[in-house]
Image (cartoon, rainbow, N blue to C red; front, side, top):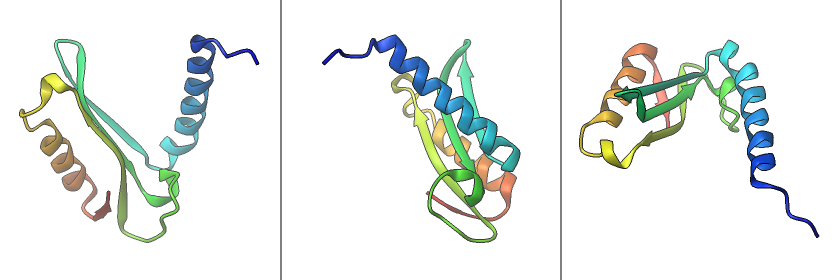
Length: 96
């Protein structure tokens, strides 16, 4: 059995991500990224249940699907900053 080339797997995965974002962004999905010197150091993804891709239902809730901080950014409260921005911006309950 022949293995797929890593680049081909990456391209297929990225196509799936783009298709999902084309579906989810109009429904209120958010992705926020913090940069330091043009390098991404932290990010968060969240949105309403209908945009999350997870089996969650409800009104007035936000689903956080991902939060990430680069090792170099640990201890700088980047995650806390992104969570606070999410909660302040949405003014509703959220599920992680």
